[in-house]
Image (cartoon, rainbow, N blue to C red; front, top):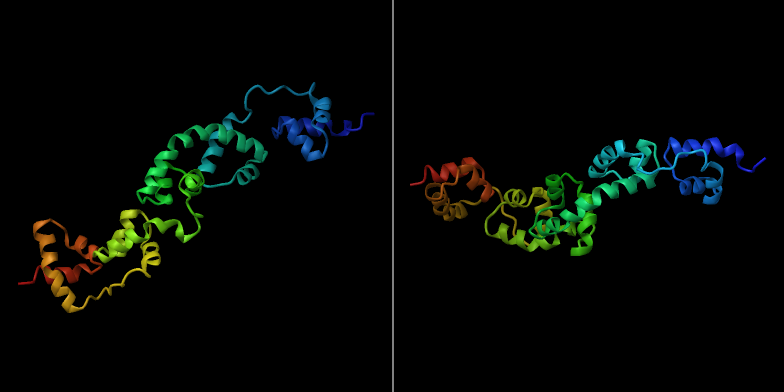
Length: 236
């Protein structure tokens, strides 16, 4: 009796149903690839095309949402190698095509999350694709915004609120605040009357001459709309 005869049916199932290849089966049972081949090669149909054609679209969708190859493999009950190979085959041409567009957007200040939302990829994929070209820090580190801090600080000093800056760069107001608070003098929302008096001509010019709404002026200067209304519409 051959040494591995009792495993033949199991190996055949792994090959036909789980879609493991000879190498993966051999590794799983700690035997040589040639051993697996010798036992089952005449009992299985040679693969000429991917047996996962109907599944790849679903795997790609999971991957785009940020799931790892291992997570997809566990959820779909297939080998990680099969998932990785088929996703790479499907996605690499697309990712390589978009890579420099993503880099250009990131250099313009667009966040990883915003790029990901626009192109329907998880921000982790964007990060991993472009990080080596632009020396991007770890995505979990707040210094991912290091190249924007001075620019945000200048905008805030020039009068824009954290909310307006955040909207402009597709990040949260808290992100802008945390990265600029040590570089700017934080304005109090309840601006002192003397400061308001100095701003009234500016607000009136924005409202009457440039067509800004009261809400837009309020957002720009981090002031409530009612305060702007009171000093612009009622000022004589």
